[in-house]
Length: 146
Image (cartoon, rainbow, N blue to C red; front, side, top):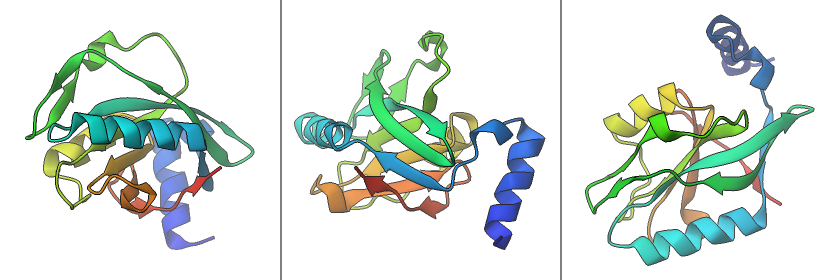
């Protein structure tokens, strides 16, 4: 077990999220296609949504998007989290950046730490190669499109 893996397990236990530990992330191709299309159509504004998924046998499988009311601009996107439906399969979030950087801002990092375990940022040119994944600590992680 790596130091990072051990740290994540300890933090998950302390935060009460230990039931959602995953070693891999799989995202349905249809979800990726939808995210990319929405990012392209929203440009030059950002878009934001929640990722819907379940963890089974160490694999977090993202199978849908949840959209909440909010506001978007070329400076950012805000969701009204208090309007989240009562569901137990929110895994994290996805949002776009209108530029070529998918690096999380301080506001992104704060949001990541409070809202789920897996987050995506999509930057221009809004293709599969411009999707970067992060854990709740803002560390870049891998995923597979299935």
